[in-house]
Amino acid sequence: MRRPGRQAVAAGTRIAILVCLLAGCRPLTVSPGPAARTPVTQTSAPVGLPETSVPAPESSPTPCSAALTPAQTQGPYYRDGSPERTDLSEDGSPGAPLLLTGLVLQTDCTPIAGARIEFWQADGAGVYDNAGFSLRGHQITDARGGYLLETVVPGVYPGRTPHIHVKIFSSEGRELLTTQLYIAGVSDQIPDGLFDSRLLARDEPADRAGRRHVSFDFVILP
Ligand code: FE
Image (cartoon, rainbow, N blue to C red; front, side, top):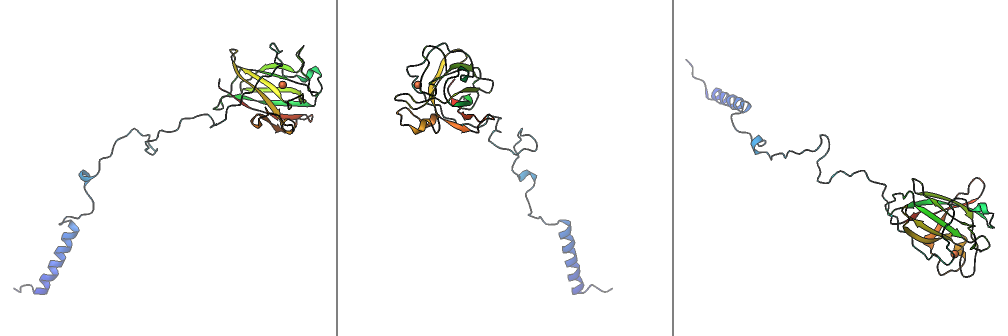
């Protein structure tokens, strides 16, 4: 019987090694087994949402960094007891028609509904009614904190640039702000020690009747 030659033995050895490799005879250092893996921390994070240490933002009001409306002196012509009304022009006082609208807000832009907002002013000739209530009135802000005033453009009186006086009270009657408003193109044309550009009402498109429209949002601490 012929014994296998040296070449046949070598070929058989190569085949045996190949079979052994395919069968996993030696350890393969590909990856650690399950026991060597880093433990996974179980969390209650909702499925489908990435884990994060930052809590999800809650729904919040529109960001607002409104600055407080500056206070100003009430002057010598304030009279308590003005009628509740939005139209001061119904008195027929002289002056160019003016529509003033706006909001009363907290610093985070939350509306202050139910606030009492009071206006008084000189007529177009710079004259106050100190006997009656012409060009004097108050109103209550609506759910949006909104107000609307129909009046006339105030005139100049000695020592003062044209302005509209304002007081705002809480729904409980607590005074929250006393200040004055100024009208662009009118109040800022005349030198005045009290004039403050932060109290300048914004110009808005004229209404259908061509009446001048300005707006101002008051920002106060309730
Ligand atoms: Fe005044």
